[in-house]
Amino acid sequence: MKIDTPELAGEAPVALKDPHATLEPGAPGGEAPFDQPSEDQSAEPEPAAEPEPGSGDALSDEELERAVFALVFASPEPLSASRLARLLDGPRLARVNAALAAISERLSGAGLPLELREIAGSWRFLTVSEMDAVVAQLVKARKAERLSPAGLETLSVVAYRQPVTKAEIESIRGVQCGAMLRNLVDRGLARVTGRADVPGHPLQYGTTKEFLDRFGLGGLGDLPRDGELLKE
Figure 1: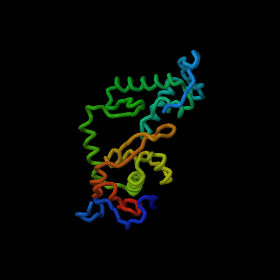
Figure 2: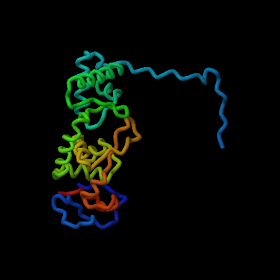
Figure 3: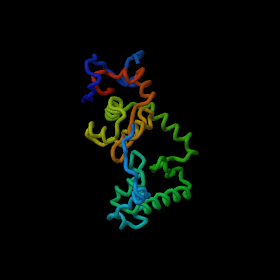
Figure 4: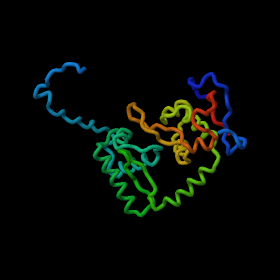
């Protein structure tokens, strides 16, 4: 499988391999007129009405909380309350926010090392700060592990197409890659670079300095020019 990289065409192909697998030591790494608005025109616009609730609004409070919990837990990226409402076929936004608050409060009162936190308008589960040292050991161990072929393929798409969304990666690979993408972020090889200017504003991903160091690259300009995937 190759990744189409037309801007790199014409250069000699260079094989790039994971140095933790088979890479040899020492590899190089004036303004237009306008009408004065009338009194009615200058009035503040009416706020947009909330969409009519769908079948999801028939869920009981307990069912809604369980569904919200499951979606946030399973999602590889944070979810906003409005997106949760859409995924659940239209429970009222106020009910979704109430469910999120209830889950957060329940976790806090249970003494679990897990919390539901809102960051930049979206929600995700995080370990509590008291567990940072413990979690760091896992992160360190995972970084030392070799990447699977699927991981290398996903990382290749991120490297050549960045900034790229999860949907774009899945379109190229033909399979779901949420868990693999989260794994690459956890290892420090990929990172969130922003949000795409498209409906829904999905997260965009790119590579990190640690990615460059791992593969012996001085910069993205040192990627193989033929668009070949990273290989074991």
